[in-house]
Length: 481
Image 1 (tube, rainbow, N blue to C red):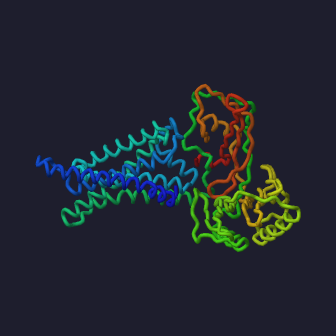
Image 2 (cartoon, rainbow, N blue to C red; image 1 turned 45 degrees about the horizontal axis):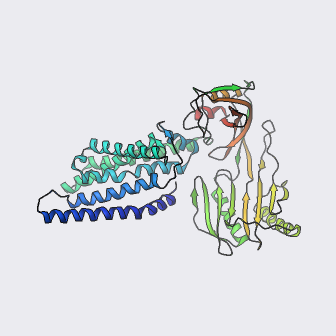
Image 3 (cartoon, rainbow, N blue to C red; image 1 turned 180 degrees about the vertical axis):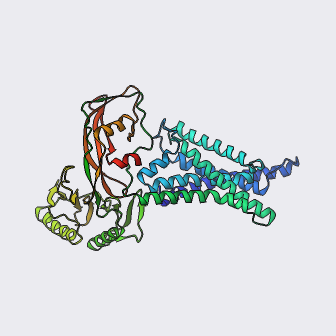
């Protein structure tokens, strides 16, 4: 969840939250007028308490909208009580979007800790504010769980509590300074302790990541699979040998100069206009813009592999005559050669009568002599006017880095038996996992290195229920996860 997405959600639910707050403010005003006319002397809220109550109500509507009401019931029965699993997932994927979500969950509850002591005097106690915050976030997580609009996550309880405590420390520091007309170092230090601790931890993690020779492996699970009630049947005998395997790196991985160069060159070729600054989409970079006819378009770079795609969202490719296909081939081949994007041995073809395609040579096998190679394909489509509709550049330029020792098939299979792999659909009690094959393959890590992995194939219960999992093969990566 990037900043733009957060802002869009806040704007979407800001109006309902403000309307709910206005209704509550009107009810308070009506109650105040009735109280004065009745002359019963019923104790009314102070102005600070009334404003705090209205703002807290607005905040609650906003939180309900962001966490539950804006989602469909797609998470029925989903529960994650593995503490800090979100941090492991963010580390394994080295994901800025997952980190932003963690920080957003903290910041989302800051208003509760800030406003509650203003509304309720007893909440000036850290213990009371902590109990209320923990109780409310538990109710919200339970509501998501029961309605299927979210996952009950133990991490969220922790994040929300941290955010609420930060808000509490801030308001207590402000109140003590206003009351005594002096800044007291202890309350200020408490207010600064949480952001300073978060900053120090993030800085330390970034330093550790930067010092690693390779990136993290996204295939490592945040939570291990529970295989206690699952039977595993192996149809092949794993080898105990530890073969060496080459490691490569994508030539254009994490290369912002390449991103800017291709964006500028394609814009000049097709008379496109792109935004000055990119938008991060998960771990990718995207530029929005308009084409020569004023239609919306976008170019998206897969930052860790050097691949990218362009679309004008039209989705309607024209059928090509042999003459037109040849003209377009010359146009885009010449452009790709100028930009050093087309491998020398690329094979050209026309697919389905509407798609120009270039295929790179096959990647070398695990036992081949280490050398630079390209893999993937390029696909181009245009419409009836000749305007570019889609440009899928899926060629990776892999350069040899090193040869590293790997774990054996037997060691990798032990990781499978321990449940140390990613599985999106959980196993059920009584399932039988049949493992039929294992091959040594490669996969990009979070720094663009093409690392060896063991790929296991099989099925669950029936041959139709195919199953695949991957285990990092590099010897050091096993302990790093």
